Image 1 (cartoon, helix red, strand yellow):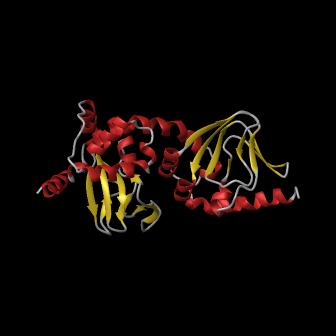
Image 2 (cartoon, rainbow, N blue to C red):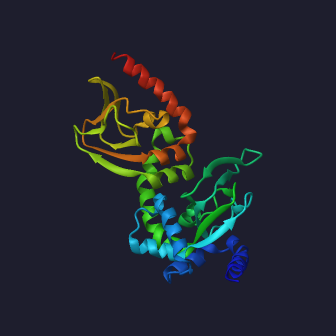
Image 3 (tube, rainbow, N blue to C red):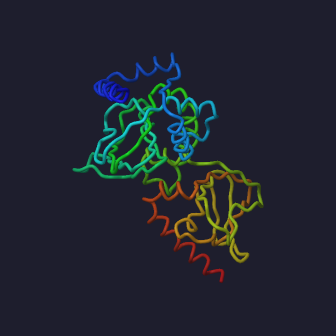
Length: 300
């Protein structure tokens, strides 16, 4: 009975999603009262496990995490179901617990939509429409049967919006000026900004050590660095340059040591996020491998 009431209420909101959401959301945010959807402890543990996989939630404290767990509501979709539609207004944020979803984008100059991304367990979507009061940027379809947890707009804006927007604003301009990422759209760069982790190295400190396993990919945000192998400098890096991709692309040990020449600030992406978010750039990254090979050969 409760499940039927939830579905019936959600159906009644569909027409509302297309109109006047901005003013309603601001009013809801100002008078926000934490939402509680009753659920068994087993479901709460599943939600917490899904949240731990998602970069958006890493900056939240325990109290905020519990508020999210209480507020989210389970939704199930069959393979082929449309979850969100490009161009419509958005009232919900989605966290994928199980299954896979496809992201389809309609381009102005293309006759048919193009599939640009696949989401798996722990991924989330729908935040851009809530962050920027914008229409849905893409259509999301379930490619398998899916279990998702949905968060209403007021909860998202109250708990996550401030921390998410702050982080995105911090890195948006920087990522836009990184040559490697020029071909990505704002949506894709925002997804990268969500998973970036800042790290700091003093002059003379090793960022990467030759012969060790590779678990991160780096962008150099501030300072200068250089790659060395067999004691010789083979590459020099400045602001906007990147390194560490070869070990992740080829599942190999680090082929060189990268050392901070001056005090450096880097932002890193772990191997799992690297493969998920930078897959479409693999051809560019593989071409860079030739440059490394030539530089290394000249030292032998």
